[in-house]
Length: 257
Ligand SMILES: Nc1nc2c(ncn2[C@@H]2O[C@H](COP(=O)(O)OP(=O)(O)O)[C@@H](O)[C@H]2O)c(=O)[nH]1
Ligand SMILES: [Mg+2]
Image 1 (cartoon, protein in one colour):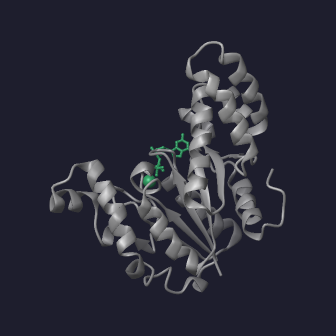
Image 2 (cartoon, helix red, strand yellow; image 1 turned 90 degrees about the vertical axis):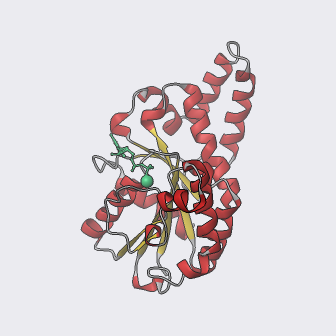
Image 3 (tube, helix red, strand yellow; image 1 turned 30 degrees about the vertical axis):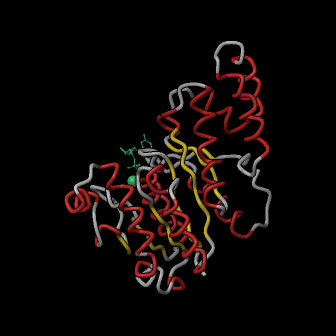
């Protein structure tokens, strides 16, 4: 059975770029048979060859025109269509006979709240989980971290993703080459406990900051208190570490921390 990896993350975090970069790496360095799947009906350009591409069924533009919706409504509708057409989609390559591949990499719609955080994603992934085991890569955008609050909220969004989807989600940090506040990014990666100290320091300042230490404490307790790897889809840095984490998650044979 292949390893199925779903890339999840906020819009622009680098899911599509990572599906390309990690897939190319698997082929060139590890000689693996890789299938890539685009589930984003809003993608203008997909930089890899998609074995399955949802845009063959519909695009966000089609849905906007057909149902008279704006872009957000169309993304939500697209998620519902993906769920309702799951049986049909899963009859197509690479899902029809996944044993033809070693890795199936799945790229998800740009807007997490329109798909991952709605019932449609559970309906779709439940059917997919009947076919194969899945691991999710939750992509944190290092260039979107400009301080402690950004780091904690992005980290927590990954934990919420884990709660919503139920299968193993591995947080990783992408765009490490473009990180602005590298100090905070490194804390998140290497010493998330120290974020707790920062949270407590800052608790004196802001209103919501009282809650921040609790959030960090909770985050440290979850399975997501894994050591996230530093990756760059742009330079190829960290792809080997990402690969290692995917394997550890699959065979459940090692310590991910
Ligand atoms: N500097 C840098 N830019 C990146 C990296 N990964 C993605 N990007 C850029 O970030 C933007 C969004 O990437 P994309 O893969 O489309 O994100 P998605 O919306 O999550 O699929 C694009 O302009 C990419 O070129 C990276 O590792 N480093
Ligand atoms: Mg994308």
